Image (spheres, one colour):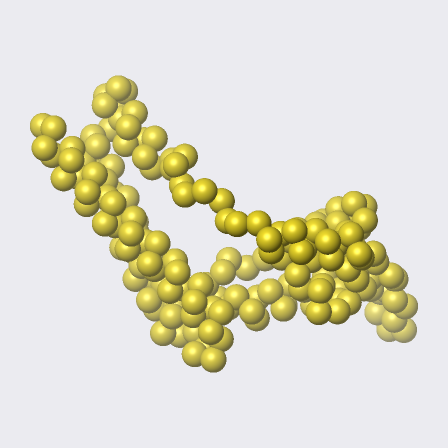
Length: 171
């Protein structure tokens, strides 16, 4: 959450609730809602580390609000983030660990694990399809997020099929 908040502040000063709204508007319903409390905790940490600075703004009929702006250090951290590549492919996959360790425990059948995981992926794919149909077509970022998630799910489904084929050959 740290770097996305810095990125949102790059366009100009904002308070925490504005940042929450900006993030949700940008990513749409496909992205899990962000807890505003988590945003404020993260903003406090970013301020302590010198990546942003906050200024209390007095309001007449409401409590004061704090507006945050990016510092030069924050701008540098953001620049470095955009230069980095994304993490390596998933090699520490929890499902694969279950699949690999199931025969050693005798507590779970590998094919049953694959079938259960496949059902979960298909349910998620169906939910994403519904979400894509309901999402604002003009929000291309949200549509791309949904499409990316669905492509990853399809790859995971293909991989599950491959695992099942290999395991059935071993029997």
